Image (cartoon, rainbow, N blue to C red; front, side, top):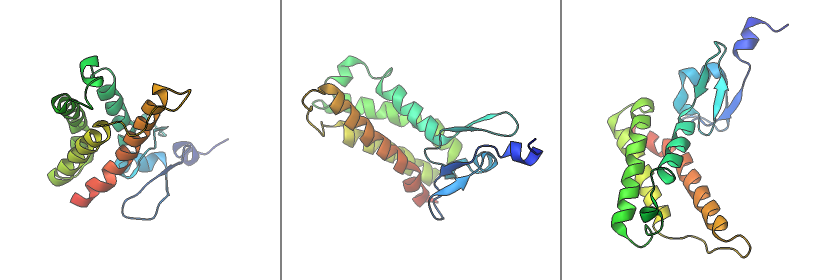
Length: 165
């Protein structure tokens, strides 16, 4: 039988900490106390039966919402050619991450850096096609590369925002 202490620490995950070495092992309890230190740790269960959703999951969710339900065809098809459509798309992404920044960052400077990074990196990635369709893959290859670039940019958002602390 497991002791009470073992049950509360049952899921240990790998995370990233900005002011220390990486990787850092974070327990469920650590994620509840220091959520900004975990990047790309999707979720864990705390000892109290609560599910902890880390900021990285919120960022990925905001990205998916901005890229799919909130991106109509008239933006998706022409954003590489039309700066106004691209700007609308980038502003949607910036507005989607405001609540995440407000909840997870310590000051206005960090929030401004964070939101600016999300908006500028998203606009930079989406302003053109970075790869040509691969034979046999078609548009799937372009989409997959686009999403990899976006995930890389999202993974840098908190380390870059920490420059404002």
